[in-house]
Length: 157
Image (cartoon, rainbow, N blue to C red):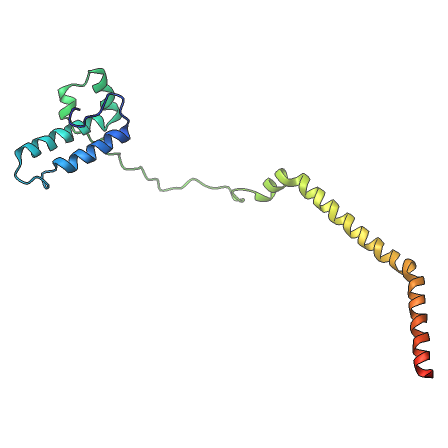
């Protein structure tokens, strides 16, 4: 632990950063032929094996880590291969998820209001179309008579 120069309350990220910094400094490839660098690098790797593992670090911090655990392989045991079955579970014949039902359940009221508003606007347009002819008839008669008088005046002159 003294190789990493980390306090008792260091986070995993701080320990990892200190390990990478120190390992670059004491790596045997960078210090070719130096027995001290090789020894420091070995001690650094052993310290990180303990401090890099959350379970081993907790045991080390409590002072109950044994020498056998330090010498043990720090890597976790490999996972057993998954068991494969020949038959896949059957799926229901229908769709997996009914999006239409979901949409209606969550937006049903909004869809209903929009449909009613659309029908109301359509009715208003139809009523306006029916009311146009009787309302505009006097103006239309006046405009056609003015136009007829103008055409007669142009013909006479």
